[in-house]
Structure formats: structure tokens, C-alpha cells
Amino acid sequence: HDVKADHGRPLSLASAAPDNGPSGLPSGRNYSFDYGDAHFTIIDSNEDAQTLRARTRPWLERDLAAAKRRWKFVFLHHPPFSSGRHGSSKKVQSALVPTFQRMKVNLVFAGHDHDYERFRPINGVTYVVSGDGGAGLYRFEKTHAASVRRANRRHGLTMVSVDGGRLELKHLAADSSVLDQFQMMVG
Image 1 (cartoon, rainbow, N blue to C red):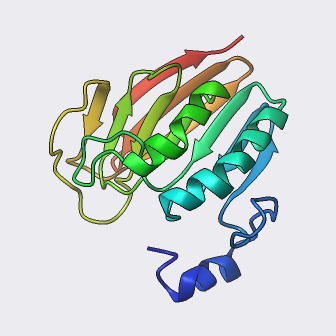
Image 2 (cartoon, rainbow, N blue to C red):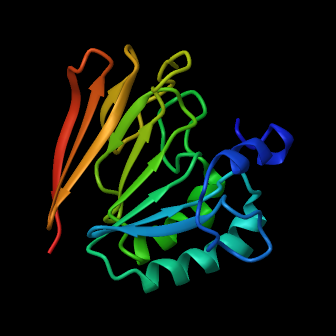
Image 3 (cartoon, rainbow, N blue to C red):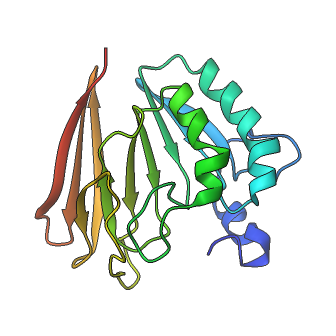
């Protein structure tokens, strides 16, 4: 929704994202940064499939190959996998998922569907849809085979803490009750 208003100008004026994304694409929509023991990559999945393949994917591959942190996280709007109303994004699956797998991304976070859903690792990558933060919640249309936890009755937020090689994810409802919780370990 943010890019629909004047092609994202209000968002770019209100934020200070790094300008290290792919050349030729709008600044501040694709970028990465390190924090502690984690590398964060943010991708503008609003681009068409051809742009994702031709411009975003090569940059993503270079970015993740250069990442020297223990943890690799990717954030994008359209979920590669989802049981929600919008469902899985085929363009993200074809253009980016193979790179997530090859470059050993630990977690991919998305929104778009107004619900929460966590998947068991798919070819080594755990996918989370965390879209239940504000607007009206969506019904689940189906159940994806890799889905392990879903919630769509209460608004919530996802919190992640990292301590060395241990990660803990908690998805909390607005009343602070735990809707999902899991841990991951990396060497």
C-alpha cells in the first residue's frame, strides 16, 4: 500500500533506509544491513517478475554471498508461501526462492495476507507470514502442506530474539498471549 501513494514518495521521505540496493531501481526499497550477529535483506516484491529476476535476484545473490553474519533474514511484502486469501506468490517463488535456498537464508518474513502463518522449513528455509498487525483479518482459504501454525482471530506481532546460535520467535496477540513460539539453532 505504501508504494501506491505517489510511487512510494511519502514512505521514502519518512524513512532513512540504506541506499545499497540494485542499481536502476528506486532507492530505499531494496536494501540490506547488519545488526549484531544478523544480516537483514529487504526486498521490494511489488516489482514485476521480470524485474525481480533480472535486477533484484542478482543483487540479492551478491548481497547474501557477502553476508558474514551467522543469521540471514529476508523481508518482503508478498509471501512465497501462504494459506491466506492472497495465497502463495508464484512470482516470488520462481524469481527468489531458489536464491533463498542456495544462499542458506534462515527466515523469510512476509505480510500481504492479514493473518499469521509459520511453515516448517522448506528446503532449509523457514517462512513466516506476519500480516495480522492492524487491518481486518483474513480467513484462511486452504492449508498449505508445510504450514505448522496459523492464527487469524486476533491481531498480533512477531518478536524475534537472537543469542549467538540460538533464535527464539514468539508471535503474540494484542493481549500478550502467545499464539506461536519456536526456536532455531545454527552452528
